[in-house]
Length: 394
Image 1 (tube, rainbow, N blue to C red):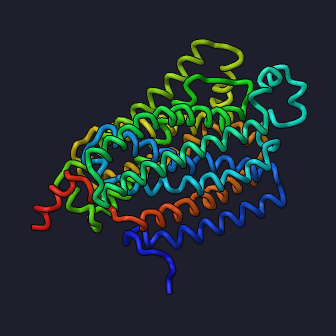
Image 2: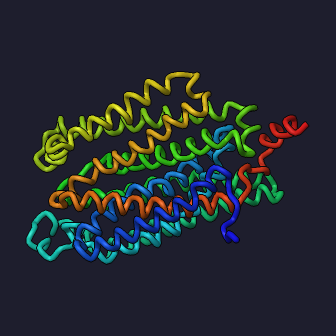
Image 3: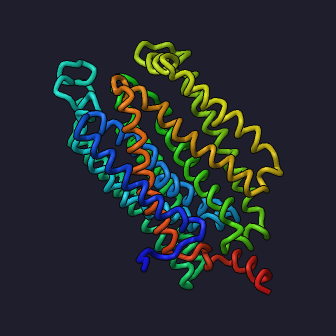
């Protein structure tokens, strides 16, 4: 007899395979530690930076919905909230990195004391301070997620709508400010400090947009492919929720392209010796192909496809585009940090990357589907939703 809670039929078919794939990937990743501890930590960080995108992005997009409203948010609210409730899991998954900082970050190695640039940054790039900051980021995210989930669930229990919705908007307004700060600093700590001689003032914004795009793509795939077989169906038929999801994906694709090009333009035109080598490294040795892939498949092609009104109203085609954007988000993270993590990893390093990705990704998706099963798929306390569903039931 299964002890797992019931979940959406489509996700239920994927949940056990996700657990098996995640477990197998994690075992292979741990086996890699025995042969090359340094590559284990580098591969683990690469996978972690991709997977944690979803939990952080779900929290950000959830707060955007509480501030702006719209039918699109009613269709994906419970999915987003399920993603936010995986943040404690993400915090636990961060712990192994604490034991491998010298394997990953140049500033955590003894020879950093001989580098005058790193000495200037030593107060900030201190291993103990690094871990304290990471704990603070997760504390902020988990507390925000708990507060938003509690207030949202209270609406379903019959709490005063006006008072609770004002509380949700207040939490979301202040929460987005905190998200902006914590995502910026965490992206600098976990990713930009891989090359501590380099800096970008747009780096945090790049990760903010990327995490939101990852979360939107994930929930769009779920809604598009599974919506017709779930309680979401009446909402999708009676409202432009699916079309709005497509428009939001289009907006995030354009915003990602704008931010990415802005970073490149500012650094390349500035032509500073401290900054330009970061791009030079990514325009040689095969990395230029990865960059071109991003230009074509994370911007140009989705941009052209999402211009189509018909595509945004077709669940299967919209879901296919969103699935492509999910894959491209992985490529994007790989392009941003991969060159620093694979200076001498060899082919075995790439295999360990895949194992870590399947390990952390599979376990996160399993945790996500469990959280989806914990609550009804629709926020029944929303008056707009009741008005939509009543005629459908009649």
